[in-house]
Each structure stands twice: as C-alpha cells, then as structure tokens.
Image (tube, rainbow, N blue to C red; front, side):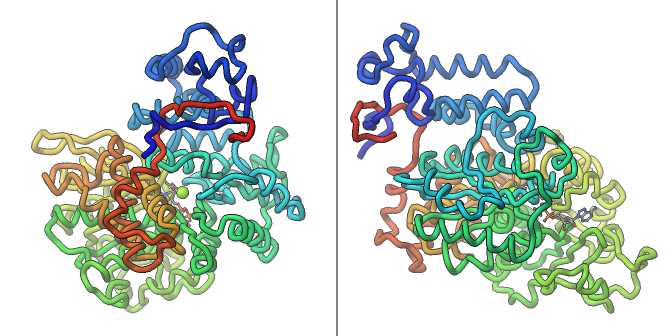
Length: 573
Ligand SMILES: NC(=O)C1=CN([C@@H]2O[C@H](COP(=O)(O)OP(=O)(O)OC[C@H]3O[C@@H](n4cnc5c(N)ncnc54)[C@H](O)[C@@H]3O)[C@@H](O)[C@H]2O)C=CC1
Ligand SMILES: CC(=O)C(=O)O
Ligand SMILES: [Mg+2]
C-alpha cells in the first residue's frame, strides 16, 4: 500500500510551471534531486527545508496579523501556492484556523470578495455564457478524475444572504473542509459558482463588482441553466457526488427533490444540517434520559436549514423510536417572520414544503396574536413548553431573556441550539442562555463559542453544531463506495455514528458533540458508517464486503505530506 511518504508522483511540468502549481509545488521543500530534475536549481534559495520548518515559517507569518480577515487572505494565498503546506498547517491548528477559513471569517471574505480579489479559484459559470457552458466546463475538467463538485448559486450564503459571484468562496471553503476533515484528495474536487446575477443592491452598485451585474435570473430560465450544469456533471462524471450549498429557500429543497433519484446529490444546508442537529439532539436526550420522540420542538426560522432539521429529526423519531411520521410531525412547531406556521397564514406565507408541519388554528384559539393575527415566539413557548428550541433564522438576539426564562420554567434541562451563522447572527449567545437558565441549558451553536461556567464550577464546552462536523464523512462515505445516491438511511447511519461519539455519554457535563479538534477522526468514523450502510442497502457501486470498508477508506484518504516527484513528460500536469 502506498502511504503519502513513499508515494511517487510523475509530473510533466518544469521550472516556473511546477513552482506555481499548488498541487505539486514544495517551495523550499524540493529535494536536491527534484531541483535538478525539474529545472529548479537557480529558481530556489540554497537551503532545503523540511515540512516542519516550512510549517514553522508559515505559522509565524500567519501570526503577524491579528485581524481574522487578513489571516484569511494569507491562508488563501498559501492555498494558491502549496496545498500540502496549507492543509498540513490547518491540520496542526484545526481549532484555531477553521474559524478563519470557514465560518465566521469566510463570511466576511465572501462579502468583500470583489474588493479582496487577487486570483480566481474554482469554476465560474455565468448566465449569459450559457451557450459555451459545456466548452468552459470541459476546458477546466478535461483529463481530471473528479469525484466531487461543490456548487452554489450564492443566494443564501451562510446567514448573510445573496452574495453574487463572491459565493464561490463558500464552495471553495466547503471543498477545503472536505479535504481537511474528510480526507478527500483536493485534486479530485471542483468548486463551482453558478453566477445567475444578484439582487444584492450593494453589489449591483459597486463598480468593482467582478460578477455579472444583473438582477438574479429566476423561473424557467434559472432551472434550465442549473439543469445544463447538472447534466454536464452527470454526463462527464456519472460517479461523482454533487454537493449543493447555500441555494435560496425556494430552490434548495426543490432541486434536491428533483435530482435525488437521478444522481448522487446532497444538499448540505438541508441534509448536513439536519444530520448534525439530529446527532446533537440524540446526545442531549441521552443527558436528559428521555426519548427523541418525547420532545416538543420549536424551530425558529422555517427556511432551508429549519425545514431540513425538522424533517431529519422527524425521520429520526421514526427510525430510532418507531414513531409514525404523522405523529412525529405533531412534535414540531415552526416559526418564521410571520410567527407560528399555522393554517390561517395561507398559501402566500406557507410554501408547499412546510405543509406537513402546519399547526391547526383551533389549537391556538386561546392564544393572543398581534394586530396581523400572528403568534410570536414568546406565546408559542408559553403554550407549548418546548423541551427543544432551535434557531436558524439569521435573527440576532431573537431568543430574548424573557423567552429563555419562560422556556426554563417548563423543563428541567432546556435544550437550546442557536445555529445561525456567522457568529454575530446567533439567536442567543451560549453565555446568555447559560446565565438566564442558571446553568441548566444544554447547548450547541452553529459557529464556535467559548465555554460557559456551570453552577458546579466546571466549564461547559459549547458543541459546534455545524454541518462541517458530518458532511465530509457523509460525502466521503458515498463517494468511496460510488453510491448511486446518498439515501436518508445512509444519512441517519452517519448521524447515529456521530451521536455515539458524543463526549456527553461519558459525563453529562461534557459537550454534546465531539470537539472540532477531533473532526477528522469523527468524519472518518462517519464515512465508515455511511459506506457500510451503502453496501448493506445495495446502493454501492463497488463490490466490497462491509469488513473491508475501513481499510479502503484509510488507503484513499489524502494526507498532507509531500510525495516524491519524478519528472516524466507523460506525467501529470
Ligand atoms: N449550523 C449549521 O450547520 C448551519 C447553520 N445555518 C444557518 O442558519 C441560518 C439560516 O440559513 P438558511 O436556512 O439557509 O436560510 P434561509 O433564508 O433559507 O432561512 C432563514 C429563515 O428565517 C426566516 N427569518 C428571517 N428573519 C426572521 C425573524 N426575524 N424571525 C423568524 N424568522 C425569520 C426567513 O424568513 C427564512 O425562512 C443562517 O444563519 C445559516 O448560516 C444554515 C445551515 C447550516
Ligand atoms: C454552515 C452552513 O452551511 C451555513 O451556515 O450555511
Ligand atoms: Mg450552508
């Protein structure tokens, strides 16, 4: 078996062409024989550095700037130069650097994309260039063994909305996380932005905006554009996984439903968020010694993530506690801008996907409404006495002191998950929820937060309930088995595996989910569970026994170490 350290790579590039290629470049790490073979002798300073020395230098440079956004720019340029150094450095400082390359800082980088722009990364497919899409696609992908596409149309980036072409930054960040935490070879991934315009006035009026300065295309023309891209992926890479990220609420679930039987597709905001939240909640009900099916769950923000979470928890109640879907649906209370999702809101406010979870008006006849007939969160909490409160509304501070205290009256250990990203949009900070519940709340958040002091003096670590803790493993498990689809049962298998790794099993005062410092090992376990499930249910395109899965995964995981490079005119380029 080839390990990274004895791996040999045949490369056809020489001189500046290899020095500027991030996949092959080693900088001062090129050995003497490689320098000779690749024509680098006069192009590099004398000293040959080990990777350890290179890490030390890069980390020193990174620490010069205090500001997270500048660190983000530094790391982006490191990625443009040298993948091994970039991923190796991140692996060594996971907890410190994931928030820099992902939420929250990547949100700022995306919002400022056109002003920070230095060089392109990824595939930009622009609406007016529809006719040349296949040509453009093939130009970038020819001769590449791509296994994963991460695509966004940028309409709902994290919680910061429509970011136009800058959304490429979420596709590249999510791809990088696949490599970092899932072990997917970065040369086998492709980030894509579908630039169908933007309705973000600030971008439309910005003379430096680098995307297509046009209002967002919608309706049939949008669908045709997306479909052309999906068909190209299906035609040229039939065994790849197609990951959708941060599509708008009217497209995310719809596109997933449309393509899920045609190709291995995955919507991270729907399925990844649902899976990680299911795992966090399974851990929390372990602490409260209750069942999933017994919870009364309020979901605040009935958008893509809110509905994805709701459906995943509902399905979890079925698989884990044998509750029928009809009964499980009744455990949920969804709210959006117009308050509780109830019958009388009518079709304008209730999109079809929410129908299963609409509450009957009669149930609320005794509850005060505002002058528009809407029922707010406080009223819902008073009546329902929820055991679980989940925020995915992008509404900062929506879980007020009054609401949290009201919730704490109705349950001994309120389970509170403010999941909105980035950090500043959180519905309540863990510190506030901890104070207002006298340390009783069981918490998990979407972005990283510092621990809180519990009444017993111990520090309570806040689990980061972010889909990045699970999607790399879900995706890798599906890709490695060449699964024809990523089924709901494969996702639940991954969520159950993640829940089983919860530190709260050992001690109820521990975090609900594993720490991000262990995210690589955690995602590997998830990948094994998903791959085994794919094989068990006959979705896999490989004929492995379940017993071989772990070894196969270990063999294929990309490791940030330099391979030995050999010059070969017929080699890779
Ligand atoms: N922790 C995690 O892994 C994830 C977190 N998220 C976060 O969840 C949030 C929502 O993301 P998406 O569902 O993709 O967006 P979305 O736009 O589909 O959904 C947001 C929903 O919240 C509603 N909303 C807005 N203001 C509200 C208010 N004041 N009160 C009640 N509802 C309100 C909107 O009408 C919309 O339906 C974002 O902050 C995102 O970063 C999303 C995916 C994963
Ligand atoms: C984490 C993520 O996918 C989001 O906030 O959109
Ligand atoms: Mg997302």
